Image (tube, rainbow, N blue to C red; front, side):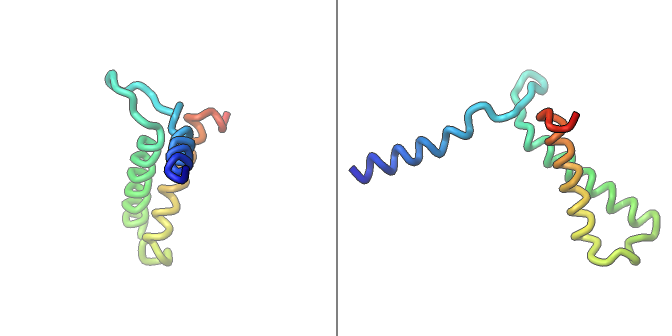
Length: 87
């Protein structure tokens, strides 16, 4: 009985994986969360380079935290706009 309950609980937890947002890229389905993460990482690297070029790298405290937050904001904007939550 306990084994059956565990199997039902595991199967029910996998239900959320059905219908994940994805799009076709070169004929293969690519998950949207991965694209959002990649664009966020690129945005964080670009912001880091802009901080260095502008001379703000010495002024801004905790530049790793700031650039990570910028990348996270960019990734979230991409996710929300691609899923239709931002019009």
